[in-house]
Image (cartoon, rainbow, N blue to C red; front, side, top):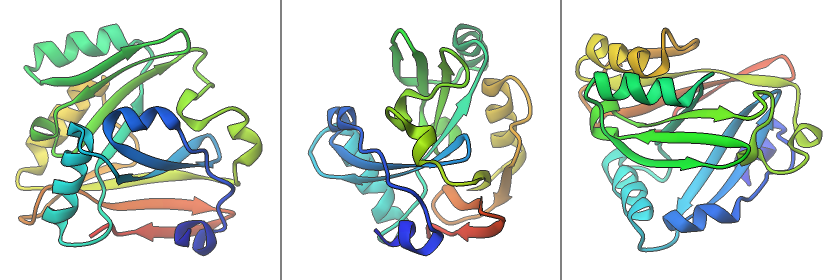
Length: 193
């Protein structure tokens, strides 16, 4: 995989449960953060959404989702309802509770996740910390027509400012336009479009 070779990432975890959405994935652990690469492979709604996002971006790679860890997903869902934001998926398991917000409201899919315990991450797979490389996902940039309004929605849903998250005026198709990584002391920028 090109990203793994280019950035010196560890072996990815491939989560079989994303098949529910018609996707296949590779999850790379970077410090205690994660970078996930997905590909549409089915006809399910998730695969169709991913395929449309790829088509809109005009390329083979695009940014589609940001997962934000919250302390209390029930409180986050109350904030979401109060802000009149739409949910498109929710799951409650023993070790994680999560809700996904509509990309039409957020300009990308935003997942609000409460891992239990907080330092765990189900979606990284068993032993993710042993596959992790030194570093972290430092931030992302979301391109939108109205940066201040969309930033306010993200902050409302997440319970405050989301560190490393930037919003830029971009008249192209909305979405994640840049991901900033630090790996083994080196800074990398991924520009999905």
